[in-house]
Length: 358
Image (spheres, rainbow, N blue to C red):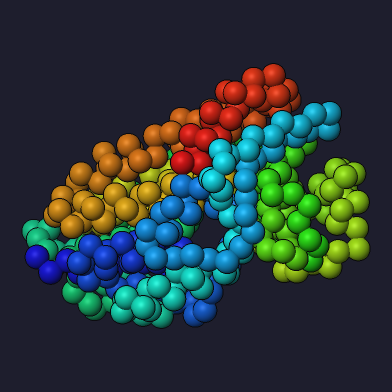
């Protein structure tokens, strides 16, 4: 078995999958139409587990140390600091992408700047029968993000009743329940080594230090969203950012919640956001994607792609259970109790943060 792996999507998880594959003795090829570092609207906080995964891959992006998480609302705040010697890092997405791409190039991984127009799967499902843009491969990995074309083409999108609901006149008057994100950087020195999560009545603000002169501000919530209006509702933050020049353009992402009915179909597999996504409310999104890349390549190297589904579920269990529970609270009448509960039960709050950050 030659182990030729076509990775569709050259974002951080696609590149990490390529690095994992090369280190495992496989032959990855990355298909990505965009040239140069790829940006994305995200919180940019790499938790300690993500830093450990990157180090194992030989990647060490520059950034700003993160030593914990702060949850706060208009009346209270609760901090959880990681144990001594444990830290994450705030890293600009462009810096992270460049570091991963450098490692890909060092390992001699081929990157083809082409859009994948489609792929073909052999009738018998044997190795070497897949083709991507005319190239023969053994497996196809969809690492092409929230709105994955590979997921759709492989028939792995989870069926939705959204269309039926949209046909209902009652539904047409109902607000959009999906969540979206915005992010912009500001040229101001970080005032904390914590990721600060501020709960307002209807949105969350995430402040992440990404270098000695820059902080990133991300906003999650239902549309319509206004980053400027949200900042203005937090007087202390508005004061810190007063007069600070924007250090990046405003970027958006969403809808954030995406589902897949399975992570594999024949010789096709999904990884990262393409495999399913729930808002990473405590900054663990990239750590989970890196874990998925690791277990996927392990299964590919063993010639056992069907085993990836179980490995995916095992590697994402904490994320799916804890984060989905927190998201359910954040989008329910119990939203206003999240920060008070964290403040009243700091050990529980700390245990959840530590578990997700591992």
